[in-house]
Length: 114
Length: 113
Image (tube, rainbow over all chains, first blue to last red; front, side, top):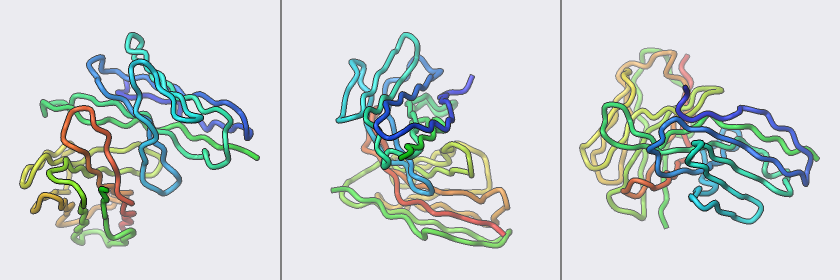
């Protein structure tokens, strides 16, 4: 099983639509979770952290289900500028290293269409 | 505020040539530092991380090496590049601690000919 798994997409949605991305992770001991956004040929940028109780930042809502090892990101009222790849990020224990580091999913590509 | 600088932005190198990519962080002390590679159409692969000066942990065996000569400087090197070393190299930093997000530099796009 992949450590952090995401649907690669692409998700093609019209402006104003609501879109949801899902992510599953394999390490039940993971303690921190994030969503990053990566524009084409650019570096990933932190979009938001994901808290156990769920959290919202404007049009973006993140949810965490520890029992199912599942994270989601909901984008409401999609804008053209939301077009990007969204990376699910989980801290995982690095084998043989005795420490935890962030593990990135491969990302879900979103295209918002006029 | 904290900033991270990475250079060069793009690099074209012949097979067998050496490599040196540099990354510096400003506005924070004793950051955790990271080097990642992102191959075309693939996810981020952690190459090295460092929790302090001279402390380097390698995640993937390869012909690359990393060094941290100063608190806020992280260098990625190779003595002889391979075709498979092509990719997008990203430096990142985080505050020390378990649940901290990482913040990335602009990246270096490396093409090996």
